Length: 184
Ligand SMILES: Cc1cc2nc3c(=O)[nH]c(=O)nc-3n(C[C@H](O)[C@H](O)[C@H](O)COP(=O)(O)O)c2cc1C
Image (cartoon, rainbow, N blue to C red; front, side, top):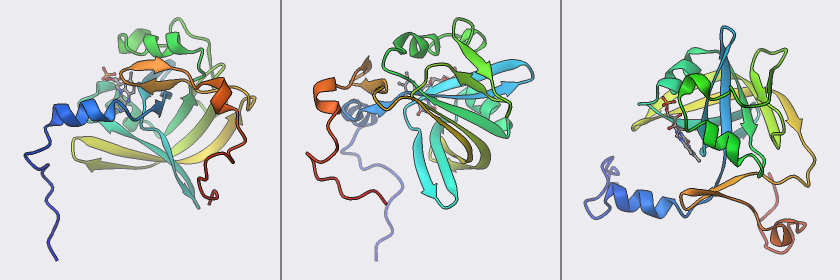
């Protein structure tokens, strides 16, 4: 059996790959932690559920990010999945690391992580592992708390290089119009 090559074939240029991947919509999640009394956070589109037993979530972080270094130095994090009206929150996270939370409504939880008010779902979790994969780190964490907002609230979606919304007419179906298999 051939061992798969770790290098991308010459036929796929990284810029072509990046351009194509802009068509894959993602949620917009703030990963946050506290450094002393200062909140630290970054926006990720790679947040995902990973495991049911144990309950694990994770994201991929760019190894060049200074904020990632601060986040992975901590032992606990919050994941705030932003609401569709939170475009300005996402915008604030494009700014300098030290002022990202300054114009936001957020609270420190008893667990000691920053929670963004109005998020669709907020998860708190304890560090599980940080694994180098290519030029990113896969960061995994075990879930310790879950706060879920009203189910009629839709998440913010990142698509084709911009923030967008789900179409309510098509997003509010019961899930039975497109066979997607049963949830595990
Ligand atoms: C919608 C969106 C999704 C992003 N997803 C990721 C991601 O999954 N992983 C990552 O490392 N950076 C991601 N970024 C970039 C980081 O938010 C940002 O570049 C990072 O905070 C910059 O690092 P710094 O804080 O060290 O300056 C994303 C940015 C946006 C706007």
